[in-house]
Length: 173
Image (tube, rainbow, N blue to C red; front, side, top):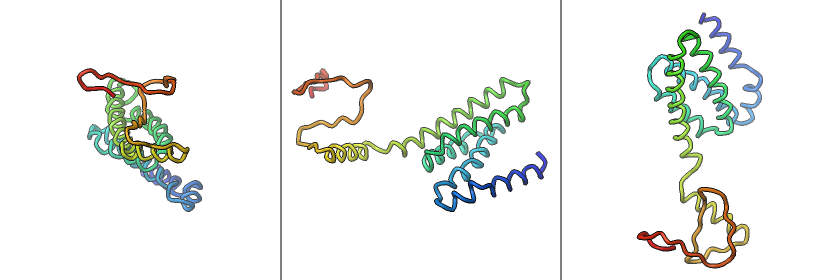
């Protein structure tokens, strides 16, 4: 690209209305403007064959720092990848574009999973939130009670009473 195109794009990006108004209200709104160029640099590194490490790191950092804007950044990044991969490899090289897409997707998934660790938190934090919800809603927690914070499937209605689960050699609950 000619340097004037890059300079004009940078100036428009830097001084557009959203950035000037909302970023001054709260720094939360400026994070996508910081993350997007860095994510684009990560895509460029993947397209140049320089690995996925930087891209994965930036995806994880974007997911952790600003999850609300993260999905918007992903949409823009997919469009950016499509345009740039066609410019870099040309429309006559679908295999190269597909391989770059797989590498980019792998880097994005690694980064998103790294970001999910922070978004989901740990088991103790989840348990504490659940206990606070139970107490806030008038419930009590007594010795011997089990608190189950999640399920693998739909809810099964049960009648009040005592239940036993037999796990064979692992024991009974």
